[in-house]
Image (cartoon, rainbow, N blue to C red; front, top):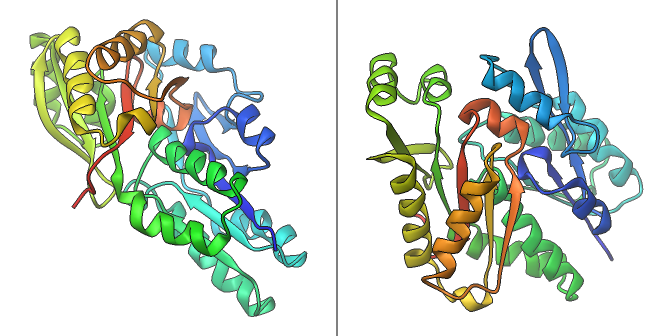
Length: 289
């Protein structure tokens, strides 16, 4: 029997790609200037306006998906007895994963035979998207749901994320760095180097002086950490700075030959917490432990 791949808008893949591959997604919501905005992966969301609002001092907030919305999201497929594979935004960064799990428990009280597999990707943005794209490929190659679940259990922790931000105010607001560190960092042109750890949380693991050095660090760490790059797909996400994303792509290609490198805008949900100018690179390497 066929199954349904589902995810959420934190995967940062274009909605056109998901639609073309029959993947449904649930949208995160963002609050900015008294408005509630729906992150629908570019279908209607005005990303240029959103970035401009952030540039001029806007401080968006986000909220997790609640249990009720997940029940509505899953129910049509449960009623048709279609198995569901839902790849969720990292539990280390949002309570949405727990909401999804609760929704499954409630649905199973009504539909005992329901097959809903909720996978905590322990990843964000195109790191989550990288797993979604791999699952799409596996399904299209004829792999069963059981085979894909096994692949995910063995491979989801091989996703590596290297991130830098240009505006420290958003990290300060999110409690990632202190107010003093943000102020000093801004004056000294210090750029943090951030990874997603094995718990799926953001970890500030270093800092460099200047944007150029930060971009080089992302490229070097990605190139050196990749396993079998010639057969890999790699993603680069950017918030309003395509030029820097292309620079990182060129720096990686100067070191290793990669099967495919895709560049996509960093989605508004993630951008709400990183600010304008964030660059993030997602690849696969050794397991995060």
